[in-house]
Amino acid sequence: MSRILSGIRPSGQLHLGNYLGAIKQWIALQDQHQAFFMVADLHAITTPYEVESLQPQIRETILDYLAAGLDPAKTTLFIQSQVPAHAELMWLLSTITPIGELQRMVQYKEKSAANPDFQNAGILNYPILMAADILAYKADRVPVGDDQGQHVELARDVAKKFNRLFGQTFPEPLAVFGGGKRIMSLANPMEKMSKTGGEGIALTDEESTIKKKIQKAVSTSEPRVIREAFRAAEQGERGPEIQWQGDPTLLKQFHGVRNLFTILLVLGLPKDTAQWKAAAEAGKIQFSQFKPTLATIIAEHFAPFRARREQLAKDETFVRGVIDEGGLKANQVAEQTLAEVQAKMGLR
Ligand code: AQP
Image (cartoon, rainbow, N blue to C red; front, side):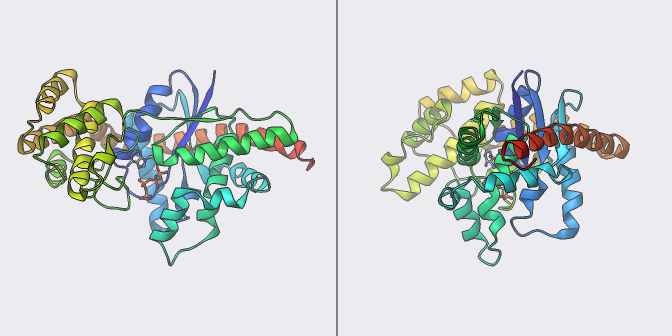
């Protein structure tokens, strides 16, 4: 049975992008794979954060995992910092990771540009820790959103290099992407939806809040844009960006409506999507009607999530038990890999 690993930083409320890019895939994969899902708190401290909010935020993230449908009977759910082997393995892997590879990572460039007063080696070394997260479990599949694809490729390169230098040890991990691999910000669809941007649709949002947020989403009345955007959403592609390159307004509208159609296609029932597909192909969608419909589809999809989450929040003993048991299982596997790596590198 192949192994998968993934995680989310406890850096704010989980949003639709985190769900469609990562968690929805995790739920689908947990039945056929040996799965490890962590709350990536060591990654969270590489960008500005409030010390007193970190523990509550870690707990909120675990509640989100459980309420979304991750089953502790089938998967190992754990907190990254409770498995010290990740940080130790990272050090060992850092000795074979070229600095130039780290410096060319898009997330490193974006996150250091966004936080000029918080420059630190952790942001640069983030992908080595992520490689250690993956390789500690010898995972061969990593379900993530497309912003993390470059990091998984680096983990793959590190695995190959380790195997070449010290003998076959790791599988070469591959990223696994789902239909919502890049959900864009509603207000600025040229950028991805993010926790810290504050404009995301939180998984806990009520229908009225979702309606208000979607209402503000960038849309269009241009038939060409509607048609091309629906086609791109259906094919899971960024679409014919070149075509709109000379017109920033149309380009933004294209990305805005492609994003809304992507959400519809991943969350809507076939009867919902068929009707809107026909309208999009004719280039005639009234966004004043489409937007509230989409908001309702999202709210209904997450209604069971919100109910389960409310129940789980009251059951501190259960949640604590899941974290403790997950930590034990994760430590067992990761420590074994660490010992093997230490021996192969001549440290034992
Ligand atoms: N907009 C997105 N669309 C699809 N997938 C996304 N992911 C994040 N944003 C989107 C995926 O969610 C998983 C967890 O991400 P993360 O929290 O570990 O890192 P991040 O990419 O830094 O997430 P955010 O939400 O943007 O947080 P902040 O604002 O703190 O930086 C990953 O699989 C990611 O691909």
